[in-house]
Amino acid sequence: MLHPPRFATDWLDLHLRALFVHDERGRIVTRNALDGGPAPRFFLGRTADGNRWRFRDDVPDDLAARLEALSAEEPVVADLRDPPRHEARYRDLLAGHAPVGEVWLGPAYRFPADLPPPDANIVQLTAGNAPLLRGGDLEPWIEDIGHGGPLVALVRDGRAVSICGSVRITPEAHEAGVETSAAARGHGFAVAVVAGWARAVREVGAKPLYSTSRENTASQGVARKLGLTPYASDYWLA
Image (tube, rainbow, N blue to C red; front, top):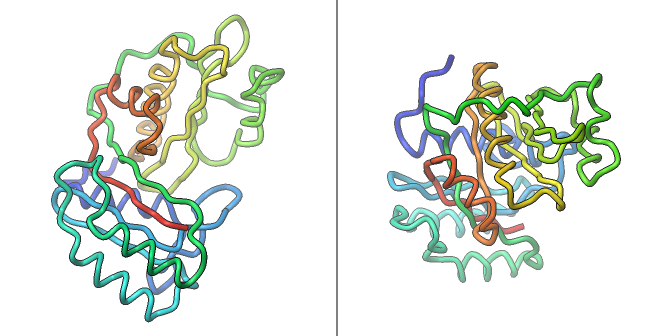
């Protein structure tokens, strides 16, 4: 079992390695996901004891240098809800290179040592019980079964109603992806299934991590109910 990171920047480093595939220069090549997917051109992670930044591999060196100079001036974050000080400049610089696409701002969380007691309705998904996902809006998750990380579901009346799985995986840490069936929302199922997933990740010797966007208040509510600790604020521009 890995020793717990000591500082918020240590957690952020775990988070960064889980989010993205890097090249030998430390540039972002792609998202660390089953289907890869385009990475942001610029990432800035801020914590109470330091910041980290990354650039995609196709960002010109002169642009990366200008972004890095601004990033180095960013203060450590006092309130994770606040945007970066130089947000407008980052957007302007990147817009001069190519139109800015996705913009992301949101907290990243770590789990407490103690998790809620296991819910008897939580099951680990395998090829054998994949039919639990069929016939509903969680069916697309079937293709994630057996791809390297825990995938758990909360089952009601013979059907999965909430699911949580490892959507970003390294040997050190797993990032959570969670979804609850539209008809089953508002009953606390996501809290139970995320806790079940976190327990399963710890059983394989990795750290469970959870992050979301500033706009996703429901996901932030799950984090609060589980007593998760925010350690960083993610900001990126695609």
